[in-house]
Image (cartoon, rainbow, N blue to C red; front, side, top):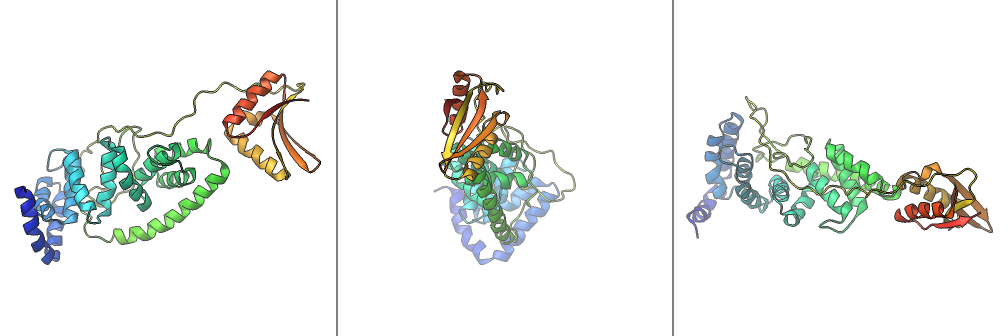
Length: 336
C-alpha cells in the first residue's frame, strides 16, 4: 500500500468528523483559484482530495485537465474525476466521460456519457445521440438519438444543430415527432434534477453555458472559475475522433420526369388514401429529387395505389425505384 493511500485512509476519518471545516478549506482553494493563484489552490485541495473529499477530488481533476497549478496530465485528471464520481459527484462523472472519450476510450466512456446526457450535459448528449443514430457502441435508437440531439442543439451547441439537420434527412417524421416529445420530457426532468445538484457548495469551478465546439476537438471542462480578475488563456484539449453523423454515400442523379412518358413507378397499395398521401410526404423528404415527379393517387375497388412519374423508359423507372427502395419503401416499375 502506498504512503499516499495510507494518508488517505488515515485522514478520511478526521475529514468526515469535521465536514464544515473541510468545506471551508475547499472554499479557500476556490478563492485562490479565482484570484489566479492556481498553485495555492492545488496545495489546499490536494490533502483534502487524498483524504477523500469529493469536491476537492473534482477540483484536482480540473487542475490536471487544464494544467493550472500542476502540469497537464489527462491520466491524473481521470483518476481524480473517477474517485469523485464514485462518491456521487455528478460533475466529476460528466467530465470523466468526456475526457475518457477524448483520450480514445470510447467504450469505457459511454456509460458515463449516457448518465451525463440524462443530466443535460450538451456535449454528452451530442456524442450519445450520434452513437444511437449510427448504432455505434450502442443499439440504434433513432427516437432517443433525435431527442438527445434536439436537447444539445437547443443548448446552443453548433455541431448538434448541424447533425440534427442531417438526421432530418433519414429519420421518418413520426419518429422525429416522438423524439421532440421525448426531448421536452427530458428538459423538465433535467431542470428538476439540476436544481438539487447546483445547490452543492462543492462547485469549485462553477458551471458555464455550453460553448461552441471545434469540429474535431473537445474543449476544456464544462466548468471554469467564475469572474476571475484576469481571464487566463484557455487551454485547448487534444483532438478527439468524435463519431460524426454518417453522411450518405454519393448517389446518382434521378432521371428527369418526362411529360410524355408512358412509365410510372408504383410505390404501394393501401386501404386508405390518407396513408398513401402520408407515405408520399415522407418519401419526398427522404429521397432527394422525388418531389419533382407527379404523384398519382388512384382508388379502385377499395384499394388506393400510389404512383409517381411520368418517366420516359423502363430503365428510368428502375433507377427511380432503386432510390425509393434505398429509402425503405417498396417500388415497382409500371408501363402505362
